[in-house]
Structure formats: C-alpha cells, structure tokens
Length: 129
Image 1 (tube, rainbow, N blue to C red):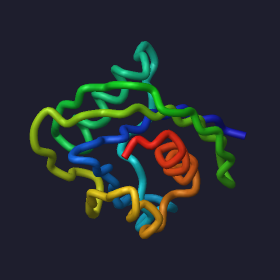
Image 2: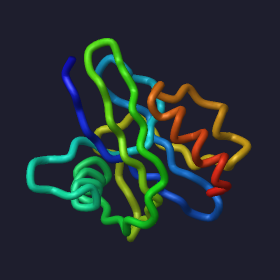
Image 3: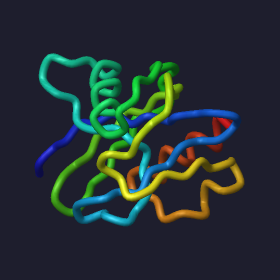
Image 4: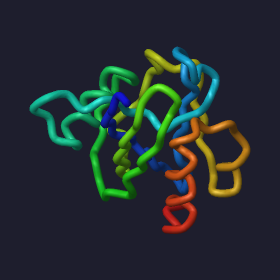
C-alpha cells in the first residue's frame, strides 16, 4: 500500500479553530485542517509553512505538536502530524472551497475527512479550545 506523510495546521484564533473545505479529489466537500505533503529535505515545520503559503497565501507561526494520526484510506496509508499554528496576516483560499472558524461546540457540526476526526478528538481531549 502506498504511504503518504503529511502535516496539518491547527490554526487557532480567539478560541476558535480554522477548518477548510476540500476543493478537489475523492474527499471533495469534506472538511480538513489545511496542510499537505512533506517534501524531501524538509522538516515538518518547514513543510507546514510552505503548504500553508501555497494553499492560503499567508505565513504561519508553528507552535506545539498535537498528535500524529495513522489512517488507512482505501488506496493509501496516511501519516499526519498536526501542530497548533497562528496566522501572521490574513489568508486567501487558493485550493479550498470554503473556510470556517469553529468553536469547541461546533467541531462536530461539519463532515470531517476521516483521518482529521482523530485530530478533532485530540483537540477536545487536550482542551486546546
């Protein structure tokens, strides 16, 4: 089975977390934490900064590690490392259909990508918001 390693940004602002709606692929229309693949020669933090710049045209400050998710999709195995992040400016969606700022009580109101559900659970259990 193909293996993919990615990073995800848990962007926090005013006790809310940013979620983004996928604009492409098999999971189009599902919600996720923005991020993407780690390229050769990058560490996780570098990859996350690059991916957020490519997807949202904004710089971020990468903070604390939250969790690593191991998830088997039908066609590949995903390893996803997540970090708390802060925006350093305003973002513009370049690859996603939409974005929502969610409170803790709203985290279960959207249809998350299956692997991202584990990150949502970690956010709740660690009282990040």
